[in-house]
Amino acid sequence: MALASTVWIKKASLTDTHIHADTLPPLGDGEVRLKIESFSVTANNITYAVMGDMFGYWNFFPAEGDFGIVPMWGHAIVEDSRNPDVAIGERIYGYVPMGTHLDVLPGKVSFGGFTDMAAHRQPMSPVYNQYSRLNADPEHDPAKENERMLFGPLFKTGFLIESMFRREKWFGAKNLTMTSASSKTAMGLASVAKDLSLDIKRIGLTSKGNVAFVEKCGLFDQILAYEDIAQLPQEPSVSVDFAGNSQLLHDIHAVLGNQLKYSCLVGATHVEARGLGGGGEMAGPKPILFFAPDHAVASIQELGPKAFGEAVAKSWKSFLGAVDGVVAVDKRQGLDNAAKSFAETLEGRTDPQKGIIIHP
Image 1: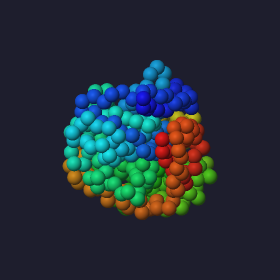
Image 2 (image 1 turned 30 degrees about the vertical axis):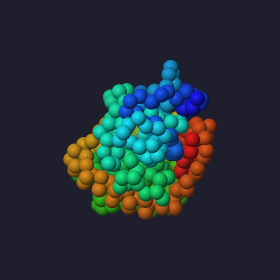
Image 3 (image 1 turned 120 degrees about the vertical axis):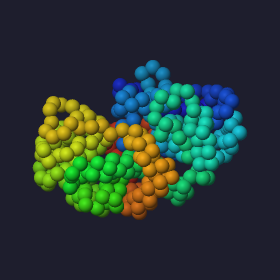
Image 4 (image 1 turned 90 degrees about the horizontal axis):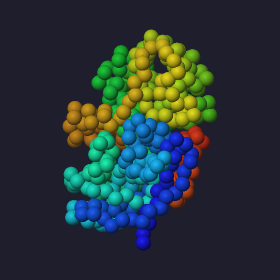
């Protein structure tokens, strides 16, 4: 009988992984079986694991006991279908497990996509339950599938952060300071701000080893190594922390003090030092965690689905032009390599100039 394999990760020890195989069950009425073709491994997936209990990320693709399955963004093909509206051979893009297969129950089926109506997924944000049908997807470019997996979800987070700040007139700030400037989300935010908030100075903070790479991107007005954050301009600023490094966040608050008008927390790329703002009182405003799906729903309600989609597509096209040739695709085969790539990313051993794509 056919098997489905997934990478199971111990929730309390994220480097503890094994590959779990199960017999594929018969499909129920209305269900569709997706064979996963490819997915990316990025810092986004680390955030899903680190914040899995806080935001319910472990609940999308349940495992058993102390283990969980980390969600990924990727492409799949319909291998089997008991749904008259979804044909075998169709290709889709969306949220998939770190594995080989996913069974979904399509509902709200339209020309452009569907929603997985599986009961266990309904308590979570609907943004993660939507799947695009590539034949009718305006964002789909066959030549840019790898870039979409690597950058797409992270870019949209950056887009939504910029939208939030612009709605709030940047809280009166002149400068936008971003940690982990080499990360894909920071690059996305910098690109959107460069295009849509021309008066805002974009300052990227990164490790000394990544300064040259961040400079090559051309998306930041000023780049500082972490050791040099005392040089941050003493002007009204907002900060976006993608690192999740508590000491670094404290240092930014200490340097900027009352000049810091808003402190935004997004993700946790520096897992070994994550604190989400913990570690005692900080100068300036209390850091606020940014949850992209809530802001996506708000933006779609504000602009309408069509206008929102058009705005994202325009900024996405600009971003792809900015990063063209900056990040090389690193293709890897099999779930063993998926698990190893997750561990590499978790431990900060990945090269920001390469983007990992897994073909399970």
